[in-house]
Amino acid sequence: MRKLTLAIAGLAALVATSVAVAHGIGGANAAAVAGTFSAAPAHVDTSTCTTTNGKTIVVTKAKYSGTATGDADLSGPITLQTHSVLNTTDNVGTVWGSFVIKTADHPDTTGNFTTVYSNGTVTGIATGRVHRPSMRLLANVSATFTPTAGFTNAKIGGGTAGGTAVELSSAPCKAKPKPVIEHTTARGSISALSTSSITVAGLSCALTTAQSPTINAKYKTGDRVEIRCAFAGGQLTLTRIAPTHHH
Image (cartoon, rainbow, N blue to C red):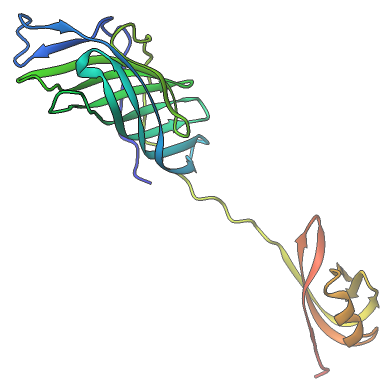
């Protein structure tokens, strides 16, 4: 998985009201706008891994669709293309992406957003373009969010929730360890054989219900064999048996 190198800090103290800002940000042609939306999953692709410091990371690439309501520039069907990287051990992370609101007037309102995720809530900033000539959008955004359920109670301006701050450092995922299987072998005469176990040269190993009929039909006490056994289910269990001969 690509290493996380994004560092986000200090998204607290966001401005309380969103504004649509004229190109050049002169302040003379600013107008307050606000909207709300909900968006459900249309396509979700998720992968999970554990980092070398023991954190569970859920990486999701998804498309969400829903409806936005509010001022004219923020009303209409909304589609969001998102990426999220969530540390579900500590319930923090980031969610970012792009959005399109198909307004009644064209062209549509489009933009990008970057948010911090904390305990089921995202807060951050969106920037974009509205349909009016030379107008730009700068907005605080907040929502309840999960990768599987999407965005609910989402706000664009108009009383967005307070933000939080996280720091993300590089912590590459580690491969899942392969189980360690201990084997032991013995060669010699079968000193004991039953429906449940076999003993050779002092090594006793359990027989599975599938092995028992075949082995008891083919071998008997006194036969010289080599056996190989492995720990399974808390006991040594036969994994291989073969006849041997005197030299």
